[in-house]
Structures are given as structure tokens and as C-alpha cells.
Image (tube, rainbow over all chains, first blue to last red; front, top):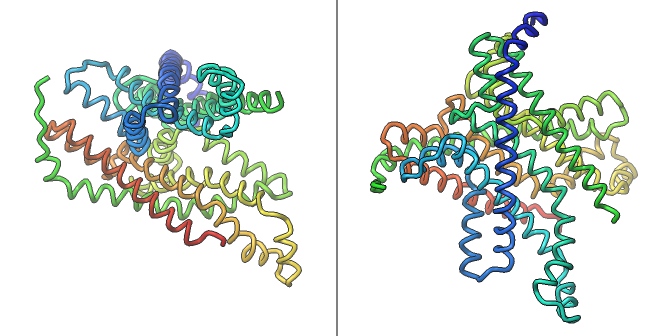
Length: 219
Length: 219
């Protein structure tokens, strides 16, 4: 391994890698955002909704969770164009990871709500709170506190899942790295670099998760 | 939207899909088997008093857990040959998945070991077992039973991760689904069948492992 040559090639490739990095951040942020929004509804539907609807949501969750994310990404990329929904690879990929994220968040919300003892809702009802008030000021604050650390860790999963979009041709960090390697053949150095960048992203998110967990622990 | 469902092409290749599913299962079984040994060793290293062992184990687990598995797969397959390590597709994938599962299992085993009350080891020593004997015959069997549910979850997620082997052209389920998709243009059919196969396989594995857990549970 020639360090000087690597630095030279790295300098040449800095633009491509920076663009890929930004794309990775964009994919992750968008999927986490939409996935969390959808996931909150999924979670609430799993706990409170009308039974047949709850059953449908359960099927959605189990189906998405039973399928590998990679298959979701490929299926979303290939299927949508056939049934007349024209999406770019970028959009199709985000859709797949959003679905993946939503089932994770949904299960978290369901689990957190289920963990709150029933007596609390009953007590809230007994002092005359409506369902909405009970949810807003009794259940949600506790559920959020429990969800937040897990949710931050789920974010690292989404960053990792964003690499799968390289296979359908979205030029995120991994594909950008592969393109750089196809020019300079320094696969060892540049795959290592890509791995290291992902590590830095995920490691910082994980540390943030621990920090949040500690902050929430005693208040 | 002018698409008629026609499952002929998928049924004609159903044997291939099944063989792909079997290969995926095989890859996951081999990886979790070897990975368990790595995980066990690393878990003991993490809890040892020796700072060097602890450092190595922590570095291994942190590095692998925070790097996307696709990057690891490409690194082993495309970059390691530069160092003279040339592996075939399947060997390379099994190697990656083993290292990957080892890191996740370390955390599982570490948690299991911490949860074992110290009295168990002392009782083992008191009946005349050596330090190693107490670990081997008392601590590890109890710990494995306690972490079985976590092991099952890990196995299922590893099984889903075998879909990524398609990215380096290992002929497993996702690979064949994609092949059918590209050759016959039966896009919806191939991906639906493939996802359903994954979902059912996961469901059956989960049910089977739950039986094992019940059988081995400490009464």
C-alpha cells in the first residue's frame, strides 16, 4: 500500500466521495423522517385501531419484517415502474427503506405502549380525563422516553440499509466508492475508507443514543 | 396499467428458488455456528481482566456493528485479494457473515454472562470443578439457555442477510428472483413469490426455534 499514491487518488476522488456522502445522508434522513411518521401511525394502529384494520396493519408489519430489506429495495425498484408508478431509483429506494423503518418504529411504539401498566389508563379515566388527554399527558410522555434510545439506534440501521441503494444505481457513498475504485483499482484502500466513513456516522449516532438514554434516565 | 399476472415463469423456476432458499439457510447455519464460537470467545475476552483482550474484543464488536454488512461483503470479496487472500464467492460470503454474526453474538453472550449470578461459579468451584470446568459445565450451559431467544432472533436476521449474497452473485433466493425477473419480465410475480418465501421461511424458523426454546428451558 502506497500512502502517497492513496492520498493523491483520494484528492482526485474527493468530489465523488463527498457527493456520495451527501447522498447517503439524504437517503438516511428522508427514510428516517418518513419512516418515523408512518411508524407512529403503524404503532398506534397496532394498539388502538378497529380490529380488522389492526389485523391488516399486523400483516403489513409481519410481511415487511419477514422480507430482507434488500428484497424490498429491489422489489420496489422493479415493481413500481411496471404498475405505472414512475419513480427514480432514488425515490424507489427511499420508499423501501421508509417501509422498513416504519415497521421498526411501529413495533417500538406498540411495545412501549404495551409496557405501560393498565392501571395508569384506568386511573386517568377515573379522574375524568378523556382518551385524548390520557394519551397526551399520561401515556405518550412515558412511551417517548422509552422509545427514544431505541429509535436513535434504529437510525444507524437505516444508514446501513442505505448502502443497498447502490445496487439499484443510486450514487450514494458505496456506489461512489465503487466508481472511484473502478478508475484507480485501489479496492483495499477505498473500501476501507468507505467502511470507515460509515463507521464514523453510525458510531456518532450510537453515542448520541447513549447520551440521550442517560439524559432521560433520571428525570 | 396493463399488466396481467402470470405465474408460469415463476413456477417453472420454482425448484431454483427453493434451492436458493436452501442455500441461504445453509449459509446462515454455518455462519451462526462458527460465529457462536467467535462470539463466545470475544464475550469472555470482553469480561476478562486483561486490558489487551478487552480492547481487542471491544474494537472488533464496535467496528463490525457500526459498518454496513454490504461494505463488509464487498471488502472481503474485492479488497482482500489485494492482500493475497483470494476466496471463492461462497467462502467469502460465509467468512463475512461469520465475522458479522460473531460481533452481534458477542453482545448477546456478554449480556448472558453478566446476568449469571456469581454464586453459580462459586458453587461449581466448591464441588471441585476447576475454573475452566465451572465455566464449561455450569456457566455456559445456563447462559446459552437464557440467551436462546436472542440467538433465535439473531439467526432469523442472519438468514435475511443472506439475501445480500446476491450482490456478489451467490445463487441464493434473491439472486434467482432477480434472474427470473430479468429473463421473463414477470416482475411482480417473481418478487412477490420471493418475499413470501422469505416471510414463510422466517415464520417457520421462528416457530421451530420457539419449540427448541421451550424444550431446553430451565424448568
